[in-house]
Image 1 (cartoon, rainbow, N blue to C red):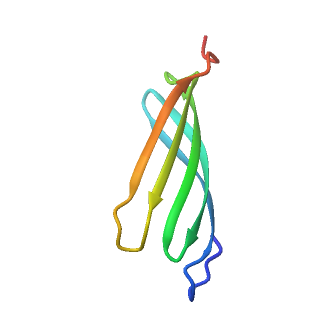
Image 2 (spheres, rainbow, N blue to C red; image 1 turned 60 degrees about the horizontal axis):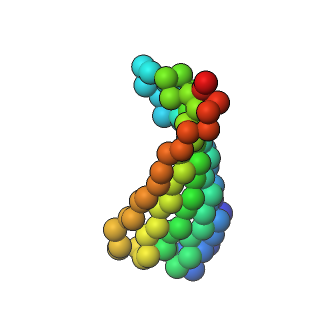
Length: 81
């Protein structure tokens, strides 16, 4: 993240991994911060028992004191077959 503290403006990016006994999800996300409002989009690829699934998600927050709105979906790629 590169953040201008005066304007609350800057690009956002990162990676993540979620792991449990059945497998894992490895993903990345990108977005931006504009006047302290967020918009982030991410994708995660699965392994283990979840092999062949891909998750897509979006997080939006219209302002610094607003609630986060998160939505997403998972699709089968057939890679685990």
